[in-house]
Image (cartoon, rainbow, N blue to C red; front, side, top):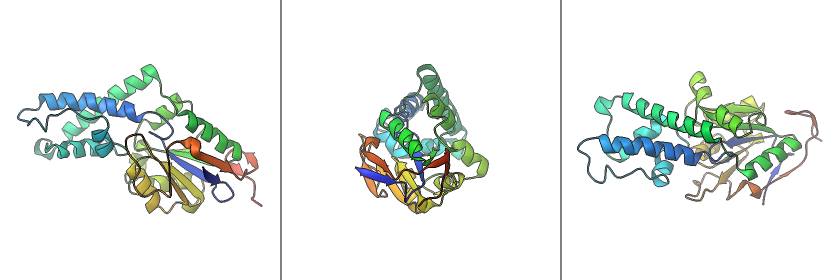
Length: 253
């Protein structure tokens, strides 16, 4: 068990997809539909270039934890395919179609929060910790709401926030650092729980107090985590902080 000691840390920052919510597989399935259709339509591709999108290997290598356009650009480059004249218009169209498919899916079938994540969030709130969610996705707010976590998170820094404030994408630490500021905490007072290499690298570069990597079934996190777990049920909360109200801790003794 790994202990989150709230006598040492006052806030916890969670990556959303793959840590709090089971949405990574929905993102991957949407990208597969969009990119397989593109690969079938593009002329002159070799058999290797036109091979179907792999929802595990291709998604983890190019999309997991990254902004949509960046991921699409990296994937096409991995197949030796460049947008016409370097134009991002094709990338934007792919990203827009992917978002349509993703939103249709979550609005039709909902979003599942991982049971261990829900239990941990409730325990952290009971102990008085301040909580934030980070994500490169512009749909983070809707994802959290549909997963039943919208009112359980004190701050959210996502693709919308990053665009509005000009925050660099992870692995730059700007997004988790802004989340810490939103929680009124210094980085060394925060625990970051993340699954993707960009988020783990951002946490390490931001000098956060404790970086917890969640190891998915397909890939272990990069070596930027202080500790690696397989499930959020392996995290234990200690050091109850009496609260005046949620998000406002009484002085520690």
